[in-house]
Length: 319
Image (cartoon, rainbow, N blue to C red):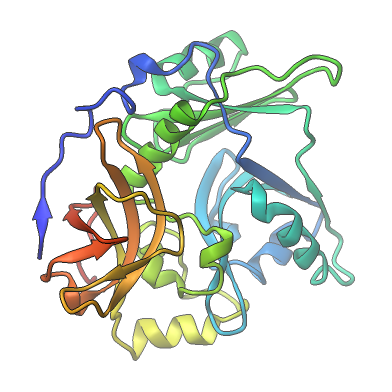
């Protein structure tokens, strides 16, 4: 397989010393609050993870699929309290997702609502976030996917290189949002997620991939011994009877690329699809792409430029 080792800290864009003191404003992220006596049961019937296994103060990734088992969105599912969850997701998909989720509430004792705009969402390096949490009277987040919160603060430690935290803080509606918002800093945040191999679904890639193609079974984002959810039969059939022919890879290219862009093999045939990308500060772009396993030994190209594959920070070996 075409692989090269990378030095994740070799460029200016990704180094935490260049992240602003007030944090990176993460306006591209939204969240849906799911609360009520039936919140756990409701989410269990919709998502690829068993929410009974998410303890308060913890989180896990999960997909919400269509009836064909294709991921419509990938959430970070945060359990705040026994009957209260937060679904972190891309802001551009939130309104449509919320509207569609509402259709499944029926008689369940559960309410769904978008996180209000007066909750600032900012990204910090772990060290800076730890100081902010201490000032807010909250404990440090020792492990990835750990959560801390009170009435005015919410913090989650997300996998990434560098180690990073998302902090959401309630502000007065009359005050201006805090944090720095510019393309370079936002790219640094996205780059950390790409280097962590974390799949993000955008509009152009909705309903294209089953969860295993997004590596969610290696990211603790799939439970195969839980109750039914949309597309479960397709997901389970691939796991127990099929063979995975495509999965998520990480690569580098000098081409500018967007989610949904095609990846070509040596014969200009279809090799896969770009899932996400961000500049690395050194003249290249790092990408996540879902690729056919049969072509990863070949030269690959995206938008006419070569793409070199790199190791992911987690094992992708069959169990």
